[in-house]
Image 1 (cartoon, one colour):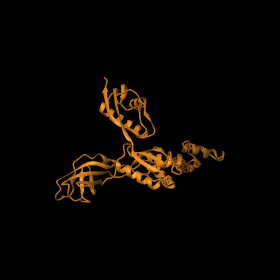
Image 2 (cartoon, rainbow, N blue to C red):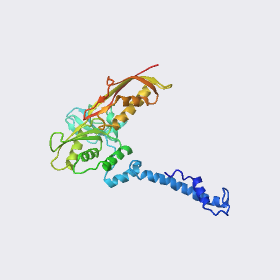
Image 3 (cartoon, one colour):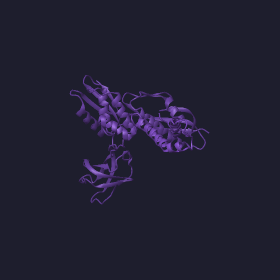
Image 4 (cartoon, rainbow, N blue to C red):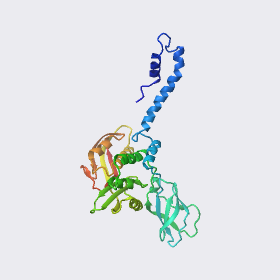
Length: 344
């Protein structure tokens, strides 16, 4: 908005206001004396552009988004650690709260017991990286009597810090879709305010008068684990109007398997292109979770064609067909397998 206010433009305006009978061309005493002021004004105008950008939710950076959030009582989600169940042998061994284990690049600590022979281990590092552990568990200090221990089930998925765009979306939802008296927007806002929830969909009167169903995803827009579903239910129970009967469930994943014959640009290989395409398709599926009721094959084709390295494609198929993929009300499309054949 202020980009036209360059040093040269400012100096030209300043010199135009000088008395005509005094020499003020470039190089003159007046021009040289006014130069530092022109530079300062140029920087002020540049700062005003930044101020304007930070003054509105759609363009503000994370730092200033949090100022908006403070007004509405909405704070960004912080990263949460993954919690795992680990099977211990011998099963009768008492729980060793506080004992630490290593698993690849991650350390975990015993925080509870699920049942006999099953301990609860929490990652010491918060974030989604703890959701995909597959290495052996190794005790950091010797535990007398322990014969074996291995991770068996992800109890609570870890989540990364909420990004600026994710936080911005929640703030805009609050502003643009007012919450009032337990309306559908209220349930969406209550659900997504719980750490680890990526999206929510509400079904009013789904089983008759006074009933509400809320279907959620985790922060990666995948099916939500049971612990997160329970946490959302308990939070909504505290917030909902008296008399409402609430059910909270996880969305159902529908894997999207894509196959195609590709013509690649020079210098590209199929493995790199497949990875880039999978990443772009995942971003689209996450952005549209619970906002579309079908996945157009044309959109998938457009994403594929705009993937770096793809010159052209043929015989595009989604889930072994060439039609759009319908999604039920509670389904979320997630990335499945990507199979491509390179045409010479």
